[in-house]
Amino acid sequence: MNYFVDICTTTVPFQMLADMFDMLTLEKSEQVFSIVEENVNVWKSAGFYDAGKNFLLRMCNDLIRRLSKSQNTVFCGRIQLFLSRLFPLSERSALNLMSQFNLDNVTIFNTHGDESKFKTVSHHDSTQEFMEIEEGEMADFPSSSFPIDYNLYKRFWSLQDYFRKPLQCYEKSSWKTFVSHADEVLKAFDSCKLDDLKSQRKKLDHSKQMDTQTFFAKYLTSEKLLDLQLSDSNFRRYVLVQFLIVFQYLNAQVKFKSASQTLTDDQTAWIKTATEKVTSLIKETPPDGDKFAESVDHILQREENWNNWKNEGCISYVREKLSQEKEPTEKARVRAKRKRVGDDLMASSGKINMGSPELTRLWNINANNMEACKADSRIFLPNINEYFAEAIDQADPDAMIEDEYILLNKPYFQWRSLRLLARRSPHFFTQLNPPFIPLNKYLEIMVNKIAQDMPVSFYHTILCE
Image (cartoon, rainbow, N blue to C red):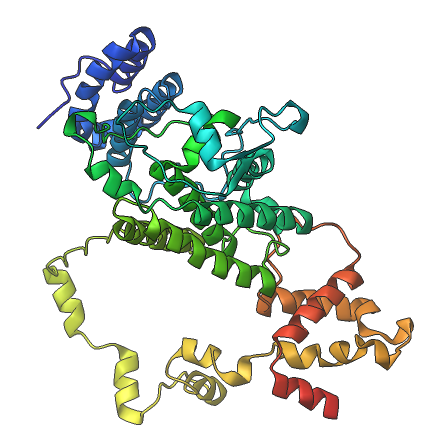
């Protein structure tokens, strides 16, 4: 279908849509947006896409900023689906390539213990205080002897800051705090089981059952609500899934992580144990805990594939169509039939005669010039392990080499080392914004990394020499 009738320029419809959504209320905008959704194939056509994609993206972002995250979730989802249909898979504008976090999502809670509304309240007592259960009505939560006090309240909501910014877990002090808070919260979840919740709800009358529709709003952080929140299966699942997401990120190989953002063996072991514990708690959380755990595991596997795809440079999933070979023209057929002079010479003597014995010898050394250039005899760069072998030996403090005889301090060795590292070492381009340090200190760091990567057999050979 031809959408061009030459009434106006291509950008005018997009400008009109943007102005219209700026003036309409949210209720009217939700109705009118269906027109934009229905014509997504028009916006993707060759004449409209390049001219209007930025207008549509800006218009949708302006709409999302006006919408409430808790009340307009459906409309937000429609806008996101429209953008995913509009832009191709190779579009990188919404991929979050740098793995940045939403640091604006700050959770505010009571951080002053002296202002706390409870000191130490048991699970059963707090339930009687904050819930009124009518006569004959079944309680919708289990009982537990685990204390619900300000200490647990503060530890629980403090974890949200680590979920918001997982990078601080790589700091030693923050990691200790995170482990302490996580162990305490998981211990509380394990102590307060929800096994009887499913059987109790089955006994309720259908008219008293709760609505199954779930809203993903930000939870309140009142101290009075913590006891009830811990008894809510959906609330538990949200927190436990947050644990799994953070654990996966800390273990993942992210392209833009710095060299210092790595886990130790003890940290990796704790994460493995905690992951098994969280998975077990998810399976024990009714209803359908096993199915929910399988779904979460599947989603995290897809997330890992997504992360690997970004690390590899976002290779396009779209296959290019193979161009059909054109029929050769009559002129091309005539050229194909004619033999070249070099072919005749090659057929007669087995080699191409260049008119000079030396040129003929050089030309016929190898039939393929590229293969000749790739020959082992033309590789002039030294092996990186062999080149830095003496420098690695000098780096040993027991060697007690004087500074004036150390190779890393000599300008000619520094210049050659940088050229060799740029060609052969994977550590040369790892840091995006490296700090300024003297060249000999930088080479000392690189030599230590090369020594760590060096095969053990080769290192023993150096020591023997």
